[in-house]
Image 1 (cartoon, helix red, strand yellow):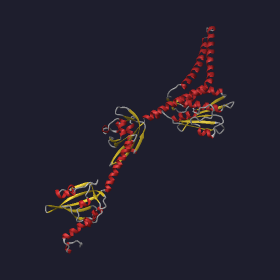
Image 2 (tube, rainbow, N blue to C red):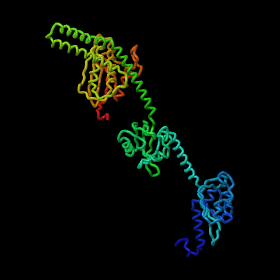
Image 3 (cartoon, helix red, strand yellow):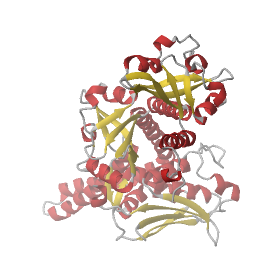
Image 4 (cartoon, helix red, strand yellow):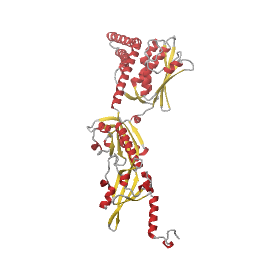
Length: 508
């Protein structure tokens, strides 16, 4: 049988009070009772422990004057304004979620409490108060507010336009100040827009980007444009990542304005183009004397053939076929001279180089006549091993010609101390790449030269500017290719560059 069984002679009222006391003792919340004058009638250990008093020190005392006498800022708190005492007057339950109680040592602690009236035969006999120390909750709430402020400060302080969109509907949920500045919308207007309303790109690009974010958790791209409220298009770097918050999925989006960077890049390209042009003009100046000699020969032949044709036309009335042959030869030589002049004018033309699909074989074949006179004048010769079946690729013909002319001219200068020699030019393809090689029979490259070969303003010539090979490196890099140099086992140096094989489909 239970120890609390009434059959053992224990009074039921005593049993109830004992169980009540056990409950009060075990409760983690502070609990005390007061009469209508505010004098305490019972206090549990938790209430005493939180207040810094003993149970005996609190029993029979006016607890408002003991633990609830002042507001948090130290102002006096009259008992007539106290919600705890109000329950003994109006008979209603009063709940307060943010107040303070005072400890014995004079410090306060935040509490929430409930004051419930005690009724006895239809009359209010007092109130029972249950309170809880909410220091940890307040600290957590403050930490949350601090975290929110830090998040807001970082979010609004970002140079990028940042906003949060709903992963399912793609409507804008939150945004920073930079977003409003970039797009020209107010916060209220942005909340009515979906993510795809704010960006444009190639057909299908933007929907594919959002699908990738949903699938992989994050993605970024630099090809879209942000569409402003006025309809302007601004180039942006767009990045997004999937996040979880409040049992929901959202996409955190950052859009960085690339307008300034694109302008700087455009100016850099313009300066680079200007430097390339200066280099081409310098190269052509050195080849001018040799080209003049080479041009004089076909032009002299034209004049001789035309003079012969004139004489024949006077003496041979039936020599029409011979006259025609002479004229045809004259036209052929004039055409040859015209082709050389046109090649020079194309190479020297100032402006943006056009991109085209072409075979490096054809580019090399058209370039060699420009440099061959200078090579011949130096007592050297060209040996070519060109694969006519080399695949086409996407290139800028004039710039690739400039690379070839620079490399061949450098090879000729490296062999300037020799009475004779051969410069080898080769072209072949392998592993989805097209290779072009220029090899000389000069003294080769020192370790110091190889280390700084493609750096700007590095030259071993007393009158050189040191920009030729740097420009070559820049041009090949712009073609997504690579260029390097090494010494040949039998002596001399070889410069080799590669270009990726690109098809019209790849371009699209």
